[in-house]
Image 1 (cartoon, helix red, strand yellow):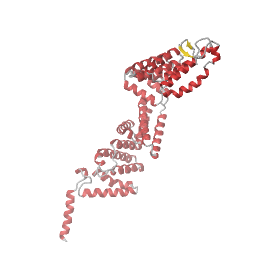
Image 2 (tube, rainbow, N blue to C red):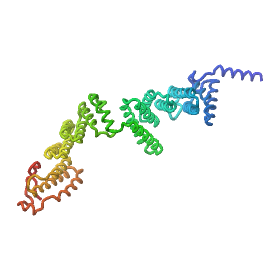
Image 3 (cartoon, rainbow, N blue to C red):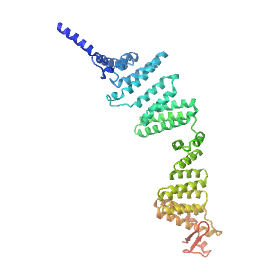
Image 4 (spheres, rainbow, N blue to C red):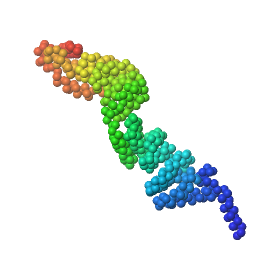
Length: 452
């Protein structure tokens, strides 16, 4: 019996001598008495946590958190739950501040030991995710003492790390913080717009990727409504406001292609391409990097604003810069349409014929010429001869059908419409004409047709 007692004393002394905390020796739970105490404290705080007794759970949890920082990822999820509850239940301002500081430390330590902790779970997390959660807790519990600039910078950092994987509360916090900055600094407006567009882009990605998950779809739809509301609250959503904002800035940044492209992207996403600044930015981009696509876009925008000659100049440049005949033909066709809408029949026909010469398999220019003839068929004082123009109209439509099957349906419908305007045999006979005769259509039309 005496020997058994000595053995127990020896074991206890051995445990005490070999005791070491996990934080000290790099082990998961520590060694000796420290290891036993760590495991006991985990079980103890878990028991209190199940009862929602956060005050009692705090002390044993804090022991594990301090002595064995990588014992389990649950130390951090449980710790944040405990500290949030203690802050919410506290009526002591000093205590709340201390708890908040400790809550922030939980997130920092989580990131510090994240690589080791992730080896212990099937659902690892990223530093950006933890940082986003830290900022969310900071925003939720700081009250009026919040440092907006600091929180905003950290939120940007977290979202920059997570990108389209950003959580819904990270994107909501970004908009809240950005809006608060805007309210005290009008110069933040451009960045606020970019924050909104970024959040919208990531939410759109989430909505598309969760299309088969109604619950997640609902969550992300709520998030979308939330950030849209914040954007509307900013009162910088009208295209007129964006015109005022960006017009002077484009003049200041005419040689900064990156900035100009950012403005163009912003205006497109906010559906403000009808503003004059969109044309100004497009022209500036074209000056810096002349491409067929940019020239054509400038041509389209000029036409929308009634700047016909500028539009034609841009389409000419687009045709010149285009890499292949088919693209060149397309830009000539677009110029023809602009001139057609402006009732410059002769010039419109010239561009349409140029388009045909570049791409003989395209039916659209033939249809456009037919519509030109039908829109202005009168080339002399004789009504019956003017009606003969519709033979030329039908000739062009039939040509379109023969070279381009994709235009067949449209051409057929137009033929059925214009067939009714062809002069009768009696009317032609009154002029000494009959089927098979050739008639030269004068004026700008300048076509020879065969009566039939």
